Length: 297
Ligand code: F2R
Ligand code: MG
Ligand code: MG
Image (tube, rainbow, N blue to C red; front, side, top):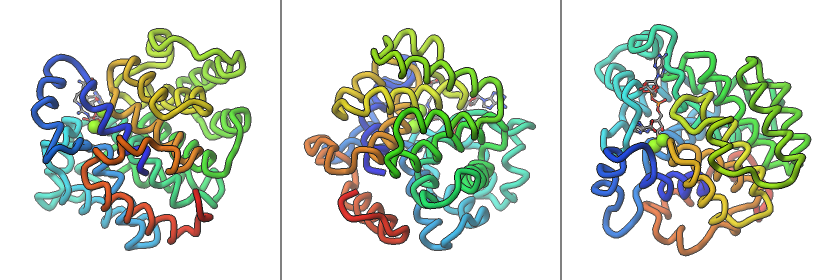
C-alpha cells in the first residue's frame, strides 16, 4: 500500500501531456509534502470499506468513492461523472453505464486492485479475481477493465506469497480471459525469461503506457517483475521513462514490488515526503492485522 502511494505521488508529476503536467505542478505539493492522486484515494476507500464490512459491499464502496471524490486528485473524466451521479443519489449500477454504455475500460479499477489482492491474499485465485471484479464494477463495468483489475490484484497477492516470476506469469495467464491480455502476458513472460530489462520505449510500444486498462496493467506487472531485484528508485525511474499514464503504472508496479519486497525496502527519504504518511501507515497496519500477515512483511 505504501509502495502504491509512493509510485502514485512520485509518478504524478510525469503523467500525461504538457497540460496535465502543468496542472500537477500547481496541485502536486501541499505543506511541502508530495500529494497523491485518485489512485491512492480509491485504494484508501477500498481498504476502509473492506475493514469496516469484512467483505466486498458494493453499496458501501460506491458511497465511499463518491464521498471522497475531489477534482483536485486528478480522477479520470468518466469516473468523475459516475461518482458525481452516485453522490446525487443515483444507484451505482446505472451510474456505471451512464457515461459509457459498456462501462469504462480505463485503468481506474486496476489502480485500486492491489488493496483487494492484499485483503484476499490467502484466498484462491478465482476468489481474488471475483472480489476484484466486484470492486471494479462500481466505476469500471467494461470486461477489459475488470480483467486488468483482476490481474493486478492477483499479481499483488502472489507477490505477498513469494511466488517466482514463472509461477506468477503462469497463474496470471490462467486467470486471463481475453486474447488481448494473454498476448501481452506471453510477451512479458518471454522478456522476463531472456533476463535483460527491455528498453522503456519498446515496453511502451508493445505492452502500452496509456490510460486504458489493456494499455497499462501488463506493463505494470512486467515492470514490477523485471525490477524485483533492483531498488525502488530504479523501478520508479523505469516507470517514469515509459511516459504516458506514469502515476498509475508506477502505482500498480510499486504495489506489486512493495508486496514482494516489504515496506522496509521503500526509500525512507521518499516516504518522509509523502502526504499523510502516518495515516497510510496506520491503515496499512490495520489491514495487515485484519488479514493476519506475518510480522516484517
Ligand atoms: N485522469 C487522469 N489523468 C489525466 C489524463 C491523463 C492523460 N490524458 C493520459 O492519457 O495519460 N488520471 C487518472 O485517470 C486514470 C484512471 O481513469 P479512469 O478512472 O479509468 O477514468 P475513465 O474516465 O473511466 O476512463 C479513462 C478514459 O478512457 C476512455 N474510455 C474509457 N472507457 C471508454 C469506453 N467504454 N469508450 C470510449 N472511451 C473510453 C475515456 O477517454 C476515459 O475518460 C488514471 O490514470 C488516474 O491516474
Ligand atoms: Mg492518478
Ligand atoms: Mg494515472
